[in-house]
Image (cartoon, rainbow, N blue to C red; front, side):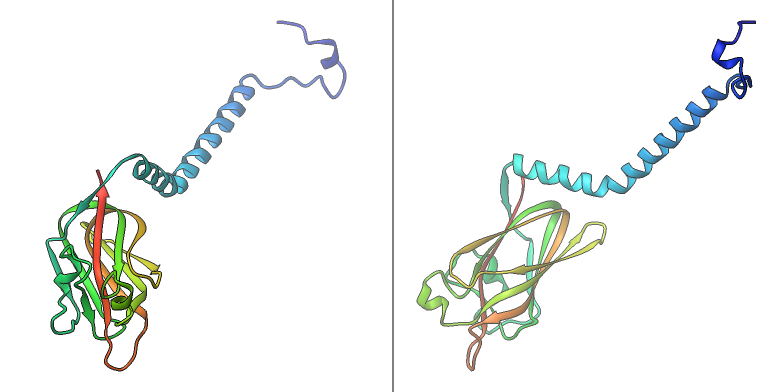
Length: 201
């Protein structure tokens, strides 16, 4: 037997440490650390995945994707829902009132990177101000698995396209609900010229 060091020969250091207790302590600490890392990884996974996808969005290009079907909860005669995706900024979907909505459906799921909205009746300032324009809209997306997400969007009250970053994966349906509008008044309806969708290329 190896003799104890001198500082272990006097009380209270004379007690021997049971063989293997150090290894057991280290094993317990290691398991606790691994468990903490596993729990932390599980809790941080959604945030980490979101950051990873956002980084891919910034590093990748974006290409336009067209809906296979466009419908509206209501529309002004002569200004159907299809005008919102016809590629022309001087034609528009006319909504009779706040609360009306557009629904866009797509054939295949995709990552919606950006939404580009051209507000009002036209990009011409005079025509633009001739009708009301949506200012606040709710963006509702539905994935291929039926998951629903909501995002409140504020639009600038000015003619021309406006880009709205989204970053939503596995999208098959997009709905825009008008929550408030500028320029409302008697004989006026709410005009939305164009909605464009871009996916990660």
